[in-house]
Image (cartoon, rainbow, N blue to C red; front, side, top):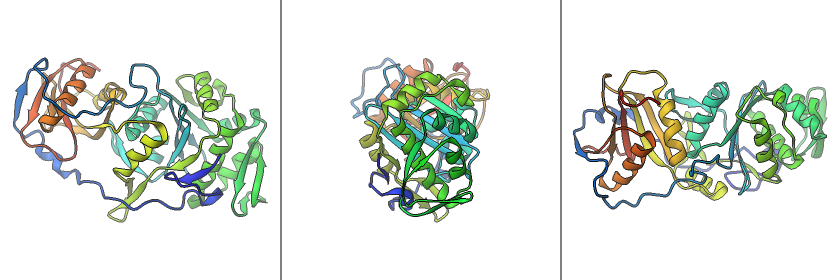
Length: 359
């Protein structure tokens, strides 16, 4: 196992210190013009307009994908990670990383770690632009039990690390369950992610077995364990991120998606804006559960200018995105495909969810 940042191979606790520079995020204020924009209605079954639509991401055939979303609470900071098998890889999302959680707006990875398990999976999947077929939420006690059941793990420290009353390293150090708990819970905030990268790498090398009682929430403990074992030896990295306006950590696009494509074999997602035009609660997350598994990422999520929309509108942001809009309509099972007169510039399609969508 090696650790690194955005694909680079860095040793030990230096793993999370660097991230590539990149472009800032486009301001969200432009969304205000979307609903006001006129639209030309296209029949959903009309002849196709040629569009260079990207194929859906790996695992988008209705089966569980080879990705798992993990959240660990109780340490110096909460951790969120994604582990993939076939191909094997793993990433840790910086706790300060900001992205859209469908139905809940912009959140940080630290916020997402505290979400109910399945909502955590939806938010992390949206950040990835690909559905996580499995998920697990655990605290440090559960993590310690998993490590203990594996007979301990090894971490490679580039420099000495203080863990409670002990100074560990440098070099290879073997940790048992209680040692992992101390190692993570006593870390200073700026070193916490570096330590978690090492622990996750050690877990993936150890061929762990997960029991239901080890987890606070999961879709299937046994299947989650099998996926983690299939990822043995995976490199643990941080994807490309950067500081927007000097204060907010955001994905560094397009390098972020290019990195995920190389690491996990994913296709770049189709970008969607979702607006709640029905007034029903939890619409954003319900729509995300339909769209993410067929290759979409929701880049903005919120309420429409008004409620009471009887029918869902799926607007293509330009004729070249008409087929993407049709794909979204098929996934939702309702609505009509239209062509936006004023493309947003930040998404490929915009969906105003009406009362015909039942989630």
